[in-house]
Structure formats: structure tokens, C-alpha cells
Length: 501
Image (tube, rainbow, N blue to C red; front, side):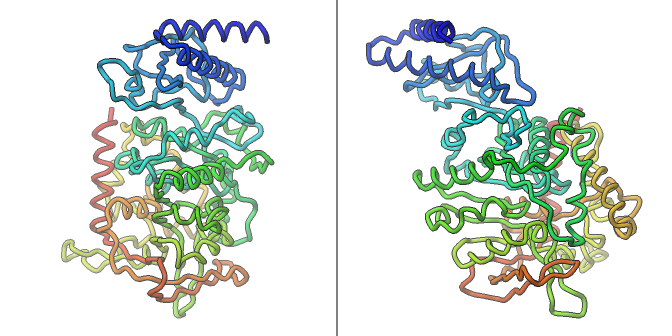
């Protein structure tokens, strides 16, 4: 240990002389910063923080304002470190070479540490190491007025496609992504795997959140609960085994930690955050009781709602609500305090073509409840193009999900259609992202109060009451189908143009 400390001290002085730090006070601060940084790097190396760690021949450093940071452009290194594995702090982050305070870049902003991994609560995961993850630091450095969007996902096929749109259109706005529902650890690994294929998303942090325990036996939740093959042919055999069982350790819930850190830092900085809920608000509701945290939320876009019972005024909850009814109900209770846009399942069923050819005008846009080769062949052709390598995990996941779905419910085979199996998906989560990007997609808005009766359920879901309420901040919307499809096609045109072999 003493030898290690001596080596670190020597390394600190090397940095000192290489950077020409002149005054005594600056020298002391510099050595202290260099020592602490070097110690932290070696600690990260020993902790084996990443499931797959990046190796560098040499790592360029930069110094500014008493801090040490990494830069990724090796053409402008100030100091180089011998070859080593850097774990959490290794990165190719977004042109971090700009951190070098040289004459060619005097106004560069400083980014202390970069990262390129998901952060997990799984005790068996190699990235789990108490004290190794400084979430406050990550959030503080990333959170700005322009990068203030949080996305919560369960990584099912429609989530994956929605996140591809994010990669194409708004990656620079994303603060972090959290995973939720069943097998949140595996979903975090899958999210990180998908993001690594998009240049714009490689360094968006992913935090594993609430895994979701066994829920009540409702038809629409069975598929998600029993999807044990999720990630097959995307994750390695070792990773599949590592995340094969849902674990609920006493370790930190990192998605909750990231949310808490965001609300705290956003409040101090005077920044408002926006949240896209592509999964239940299991982690979010832990904080909405705190008025100070609620005030930092500018808006929440939510996929989750109900289907109307045929021949009745009754409404029954659908998938996202059913997966965590208590958190969904709790969020709706704050409808008069938090601004929200609700994309309900019933809107998908009722969506019709407008502003299109006479032949299709007035027809249902999603007759099978999905996007497929019948209603948008151009989009399906692009998403399932085998030559677009970054879309391969989406293609694998969609086929796997469909095969699993029809084994759980044989009726779904006829509903989806044999010709569409593996090449179709629900528009649910893509609607949320497109609605965020283009408000013109949102039509017929009305403000409503929503009550989810957690003690009144059937096999289809929970009873929901929806009433128009001018005092509510929950905006229920319908869909401009033409705008939605145009935006989806444009997004995937960008992806195909950039990534097709």
C-alpha cells in the first residue's frame, strides 16, 4: 500500500511539471487533485467496474480549475498514462478533447470524468462496488438547461424503436435512461448494448432501477413477467446467466439515486426536467411527495392508460399501469400539481387516418393494434433492413418477443397475423417520443382527472375513472396519424442513411 501511495505521488509530480503549474498554492492543489484522481482510477481498475472494460494504449489527461479529466482526442494530450483498464472512467466521450485549455481552445468547458456503462444494483454484476459510483458527479456534470430529459424504459420492442428515434433526433437532450419492471438489470444491459451502436447515444448513462416483483395475475402482464428469453442472441451467454434471475438486493437502487440527485441538483441550478415514461413510474413516485422535487418537473409524457369495455362506460387499465398499479395510481393523484401528457391505449385503438387518400380516410390506423407492413410498409422495410447494423438488436428483440407472445396467448397469433410475426410492433412508446418532438401530432386535447382503483380489478386490468377537469394538469390527447408516421419515417431515414452498410 505504501509503495502504491509513493507511485501515485510520483505520478502527481510528473503531472505537475508537465503542466507547468507555477505558484505554490496551485502546485499543492494540482498535486492533491492528481493524487486523488490517480487513486480513483486505480480503484476503478481494481473494482472491475465494467462488464466489458475498455483498454487504451495510452490515456490523455487534462487539467483545469484544480481538477484532472480525460480527453479522448489523442492528438492533443497533455499527459499520457501507461496502458491500463479504466473501468467507469474510460470513455470516448463527446469530443472531450475540447477540455484541453490550450491556445487553440481557450474557452473550452471542463468535464471531470466521462463514462460509458450502465450502473447496476445487481450484487453479482461486476460493476457493483460500493462507493465506486458518484452519481451526484455524473448528474451535476451532465445536467443543463438543454440536456434535461430523463427516459424510463422497460426495453420491449416498442421501447427499443422509440429509443432509436431518440438516438436520431434528440440524444443531446437526454440526461440519463433508467430501466424498470421485470429484470431491470438485464434491461439495463440491453439498453447499454443498443446505445453502443449509435454514435449519439454511446455515452448516455443507463441506471438499473426497480426490477418489479411478481404482480397480480392479469392477462396483459403475463407476457412481460414470463419473458425469460429476453436478450437472447443480443447479450452473451455469460451476461444472460448473470442477469437470468430477478434480484432485489439491499444495494442502492441506482435509478432512484439518479432521480434524487437530478431533482436536488436541478433545484439548486434552477433547471426544470422533462420525463418520458415508457414504463411505470415505479422509481419516480418515490420523490413526488416532496414539493421541492415536484417543482423541478416541467412536464411528464406518459404511455399508460386504459381500454374501454365494449358496450359499457367502464374502462380497464392496460399494460404499463398493470405492471405497477400502485405507482401509476399515485402519480395520477398529483394531476393538479404536475403537468403531464397522457397517451392512453384507447387512443391507439381509436386512431384513424386523416389528411390522406380518399381510400384510407377514416379507416383505423392500427387495425391489429400494431405498426406493420400493411399500414406503413416503408417504415417496416427500414427498421428490419438487415444491412443497418445498429438496428440488429431491435430486429432480434422484436422476433423474440413475438414468438414469446404467441406462446403465451394463441389468440395473438391471429391478431398479429402470421406474415407480420417478428416484423411488427405496437406504436405505444414511439408515440410518446414523437409527441415530445412534435406537438403537432397531439390533437383533441382535454384536461382530465384520472382515478385508478387499485382494489377493483378483473383479469383484464383495474377499473379506471376518467373525468374532464379544468383544474387538472393531465392532458389527454389523440393522435394525428399522418404526422406520427411522417415523423417516424423521417427518423429512420436518418438512421438508414447514416448506418446502412
